[in-house]
Length: 389
Image (cartoon, rainbow, N blue to C red):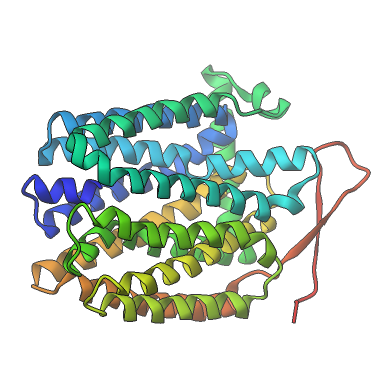
């Protein structure tokens, strides 16, 4: 609900977009360095700290609702996001590798994303009565509480002996950090299949930054402030279903993912220009397809990473995602300043999605099958799987 909080505090669409730009700039400045940190030190502690920082930012928003406080909150959220991006996925993948379970990665991540989105749906549904009962203050207090709970859950995650042994400081810690950063950047840049996978895994989630404008779109379609959370249940529900079913499409060929992205573009443009709240149904379907593509592109990137700096490579993709997000925010902000309605700006985003679908058809790596070996625990060998028809 923060886009509406900003608008109701007197900010226009251009000012709101500038906050989103600040948010993304903060993330991509810290994205790769934080990934190297996660490779060299404790990933679960990084995740816990990221939750605490985000909670402090939300508290600032409700305590001092002003442009300056919103900006400070987004800087904290940006630091938090950089610490989380890449770290969480690398932790999950490496813990699965330790038990030779990487073949379950897509299904587990998809289900995890579905659970998260169902939680978002519940929270979004509760936002309507919460706004009516306690306004933005109650919504903000609940958000801070969730961030604290996130930090506690993060500390309960397991860590492999490799991660625990790496925890430390001083000169040794700096050397580990530098080595992780160098190894990750080298793999992301010098290995063609990884480089292409990084680009796709960056651009697809970057395009979903458009969801920040969905509350404004719903209001422009004629929905009241209290009804906006109910309309936002539609895209959240579609993304939850897509995440839950993502495991079924783990072996989907590149052309299937490309077709899903092209369909998402068409649905997004049609729904945004509907001029009625019913158009959110098509927008929701579009985000469901984008969620499927997001899970699959990130999973294919995980599969082609072979070096020791997994979080750093994933953070490189996260860096690219933030660059794409900033491009979206700047374009929407400029268009809004030029007098274009939110519906038209959202619809125009379908054009880059079509371009990404063309790239996915050529660049998305073929699915791999993971087989257990007789090597030491935690070692997983990958072999190319034939293209599925």
